[in-house]
Length: 419
Image (cartoon, rainbow, N blue to C red; front, top):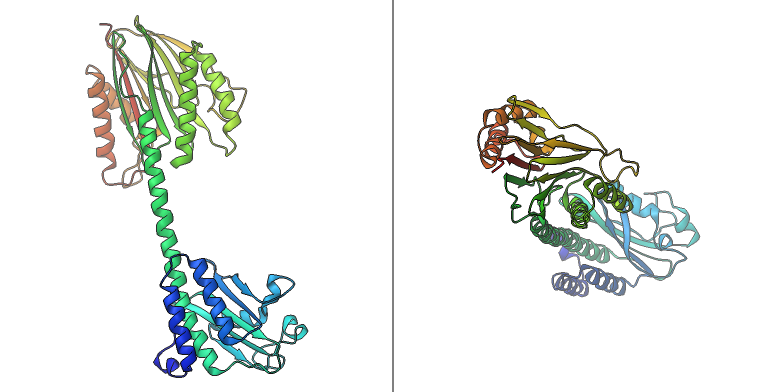
């Protein structure tokens, strides 16, 4: 924006124009409309043949957003030589002798089009280039005056501030829209988590789900297959945010539908993998662990690239991990999945988890790790499923302290009581 001295050099007609332009800029949130009105007004007052209003990107490269005048293409509407000089010096440039001005070397467009008068001013906000306004003419009787220069300087100052405000406004609007969408996605995701635990005699079930962002990539699921059987799923999508949530919802729905259709666990997961392959164009994948439990303690377990659950076996008072195996869904059609059968006895437990638990870091960058997890499970081995889960969560939270959380955390504890 020009100072008071610059304003004193603007003609009364131009001062009125500046006032009208300022009112226009401040009267609309549709900035594209404002820019067009500004350019039309400038062209009329300057009586120029061609005009361009340019906006700078994050690298301060100028791009024409509003153009006036006739040319074979948009680039022909302005002199790149003049634009580059203004960008270099951050100073306005007025010439009424474009062919022979000693301040620059005339470019091809100046010579071939016979340009005579050119006026170009930068739009600066706190020293940062946000755009430029350019006018030219090849008419012999037309020149640009110092008053024209000061008017365009003043317009550029107002327009620069308006462009920056418009950019910040758009960022705020987009951020608000994104936050609303993420909140809706989170609500949908939370609604997909099981609200009730399966009622199968002989089992205690405890679970915890905590997202690192607005929307998580982890999920777990319980579903009752009959009065004497239930299914349990824990999974972790490779990405985070809304895309991961959508991928998660697809995987959950497919596994559930196949299970309720009566498919054997291995077939259910094989079909889910094939269907997800068709939808995994962005390279996203999901690790899954799926188990089925019967009232008599017989259980079946299938790993698709997930962290192997930890098993506490009361007989022998020992801890061990279920076998690894299989690949994450969404990568390979030929997935070497296999089912492992396990007979549970009263007091036995299975702890499912995502790597948000074992990979959780404290302020020193140290990971919580599988050993700490196993130690807590062993210390609480005679307690209820809910007590074991609560102790694990308290332990990892205490370990991490005030360190930022980078990954989702999901835990499921299944304890067989036999009663």
